[in-house]
Image (cartoon, rainbow, N blue to C red; front, side, top):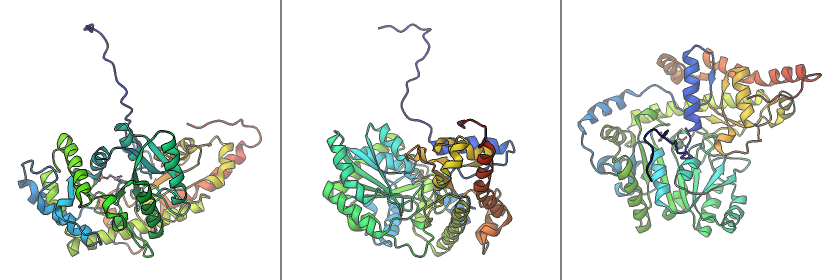
Length: 445
Ligand SMILES: Cc1ncc(COP(=O)(O)O)c(C=O)c1O
C-alpha cells in the first residue's frame, strides 16, 4: 500500500504518559519562576546541598570515558555488595548490576520476569506505567491501615486467586520500604507474612529500598524481604534520595546468587545493553565511594535523614491540624493526608475526589500536592501525597542552615510553610459556610 506524501503523520498513542510527578514539577517550577508563591509539596526530590567529597569523586571519575561492562565495573559493584553485606544480606559484586538510576533498572527487572505485577495501592507513580509499557496486567491491593508500600497481607492471597481466576498471571510483587507515597516503613511482621505468601504463591519480590537510609524513626526495625526469602527477592537501591543525587543518575540492583538469580541478572543486563549500555563511568566512581560508606559521608547522610525526619514529622502535625488524618511518617520524605474527616464541607465546595482536591489545594492555597489517583489509589478518596523535601530552602545557604539547625521546623521559611498547611482546615470551614445557603454544587478542576 502506498502512502500519499502529503498525508499528515499519525501520532500513535503508546499509552505511556509523562510521569505525573515530573509533569507536575515542571508545571509548578514554571509558575514559581514567574513569581507565584506556590508551596511545592508536589515532587519527591531530596534537595539538599551536595556533599563536597562526591564532587571530587565525580571529577576524578571523568577518566572513565569508555563504555565498560554493561553491569558496571567490578570495583563499584563490589562496593555495593559491601553495602548490602553490612546490612545482613551477604552479597558479591557478581550479584550487582549498576544503571543510570534505579528507575530504568526497575523496568529491566520487570522485563526479566514474565508475568503480571502486584502493587500496593497506593504506590509510587512509575511502577504501573512501567508494567503497562511491558504489556503486563497490574493487580492493585490496598495497603494495610498501619503502613504503606506493601499490600495488606490479609488481602493478598485472595487478590492473587481472583486475578488468576480472571486469567491474569500474577508473578511479581513490588514493595517499597520506606514508602513513597506514605512515608512509612514496613514492620518485620508484615514483611514476614508477605514473604510467606510469596513462597506459597510463587511470587518474585522486587523490594525497592531506595529510601532505606532515610529511616528517621528510632523505633523502626528494618527488615528486607531479601533476608527472609533471598532466592526470590531482588533489591533495588540508589543514591538519589539518601545523598540528594537524583540528577546524577545512579542505581543498583542486587540479584539472588543462585542459578535463577543469575538468569534474572543476565536478562536485566541484556535489557540494559539494548537501552543504556552502562551506568556513566564517572558515576560509577561516585558509587564506589558512596556505597563504601566512609565515615564523613555517613555523617552527612545521617544529618540529611534527621532533617527529612524533622520536617516530615512537622508537616504531618500540620496536616493533622488542618483536619486530615495521615499515617505517622517514619522514613523517606512524604506524608499522605486523607481529608475524609472534611468530606462534608469539601463536598459543599465541589471537592469530591483526589483530582478535585489537588486542584482545590493549588488554586485556593497555592499548595501543590500529587492527588492519590496518580499513585493508583481510589480516585474517589480525598487523599494526596505531600512531598516534604522541597521545604528546606530555596537557596543552598538556606538548605545548609536547615541541615545544621537544632530545630529545622522553627526556621522562619519552614514555619511559614507549616502554618499555610495548618490553615487549610479553617479555610475549608469558612468556604463551606459561605456556600451553604444558596450556592449550587460546583466541581473544581
Ligand atoms: C520509590 C522510588 N523508587 C525509585 C525512584 C527512582 O529513583 P532513581 O531513578 O533516581 O534512582 C524513586 C524516585 O522518586 C522512588 O520514589
